[in-house]
Image 1 (tube, protein in one colour):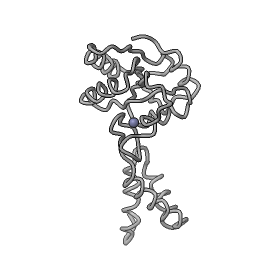
Image 2 (cartoon, rainbow, N blue to C red):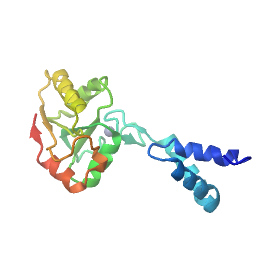
Image 3 (cartoon, rainbow, N blue to C red):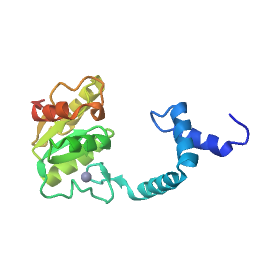
Image 4 (tube, helix red, strand yellow):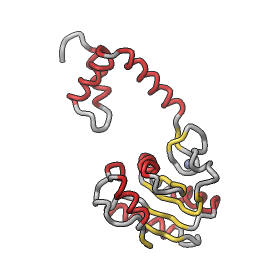
Length: 188
Ligand SMILES: [Zn+2]
């Protein structure tokens, strides 16, 4: 560390805390926003602050939202008979980008969320739960758990087709494979 550059070091350290950002990139970002393009830096700071103030999790599905209820849950023209269960709110963005699904989503974050999922199925009278988890032993366990917890509810369980490689998260799957995986979903 260079002497008397506390401010710069703090910035590098802050960027270094972002998942996937190493020391080299952190230095590059810090230099870019503080010195190379400070106007962009100020804009970025402002955008970050606004996002933190305005973004939240939808109370129904757990997706990213600016309101209590997200645009997808609030949209009457979506097919509410289908709920796609994902691991992360980011997966919703990925599937939306693929334009291969017009149902609703639910983010399964922990075992407590099964009650919220139950409420959502009842609220929308949904008929099919599509699991869009990236394949792993853990996700197989979660699917079995959810299926067991919802056995008293009249709903079909399917999962997106194989073709999504094991351990690869949805955000890294190409759109064509994802679209095909949703279309070719299988009964559980
Ligand atoms: Zn929602």
